[in-house]
Length: 196
Image (cartoon, rainbow, N blue to C red; front, top):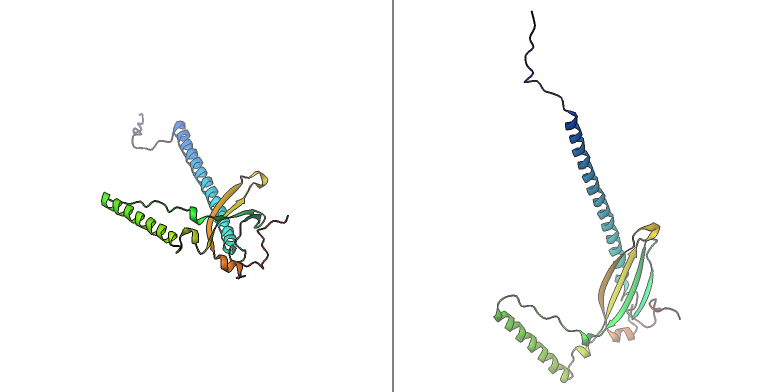
């Protein structure tokens, strides 16, 4: 008597070779994408840390301008450490040549007209004060200096050189600078002047 085996409808079958190759390809692509995301994340973290360090070095340099270093026109450069260098440029700003930015009126035509009238009134008052000799942009009680600092790093061992640019303004009372006030006096040595 022949023995019959039931059909294998309910039993699990194994994976075919094509299914295994397809699963391996999907896994390899996913790993590749994950590795590229990880690499970009590490690069961005390193760049962020470098820019943060450059900002901290810049803050230490800019904090002493006007306190430990007299504010005078000139150019100087140097190094913070083996990796970071600085380039400092101080220029006097002509206060009379500065024009205030136009006021942007957000809203309807009435607000726009009101802002224009206020600007005309302010300009007329400034002109009247200048004509009467009561002060104005030409008679400012201070000298204004623009301080440009460029911090650079990298470029060693074939790496890419990077820079960060920082700009600030310093106001100096000319009378205090001439009377020998601390940090701005004439008696202190000026590291901004280059030897001739």
